[in-house]
Amino acid sequence: MQTQEPLPPPRRDPYEARAMRGQHVSGYWGERLAWVAGLVLAISAFTDWYAGSQADGLTLSVTGWHTGALGKLVFFAGLATLILEALREAGIELPATVPESLILIALGSLATIFVLIRLISIPDTFFDTAGRGIGLFISLAAALALIAAGLLRAAEEL
Image (tube, rainbow, N blue to C red; front, side, top):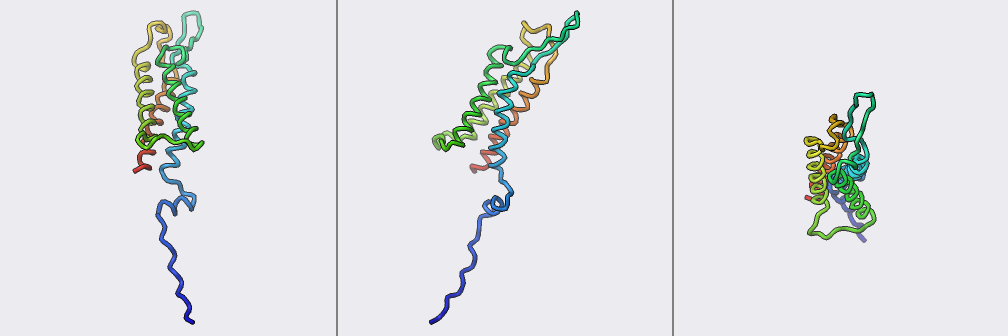
């Protein structure tokens, strides 16, 4: 009886090998960045977008929620991102014709446009607080990070 020769080890995909060694591919970073950007975007609607001092020494601050519909839409864009990510983690996926990366890019683009409008145009009711607060710039950074998360997810899908 003749013994069989051992089979050569199977070749692995380089991305799978990296993932097994603990090195993460772009999908991991896209997921984490989407979570963080959505959370920061939702919370940043409650930070100060406008700040200023009055003549009597009082410092006034206006949150994004109180700047009108655009501030509320920024919050809901962040909330929609968190819901989308929670559904994906729960195993509920969107139809194949609607990729998640496209939705993330669209939500990030809308939030960026809304924040840029508030960055450029201060509402007349808050003219006394003409200075822009740190929350406005945090919102802008989170909206741009959401676009980046969508692009990382799109790179994973290709």
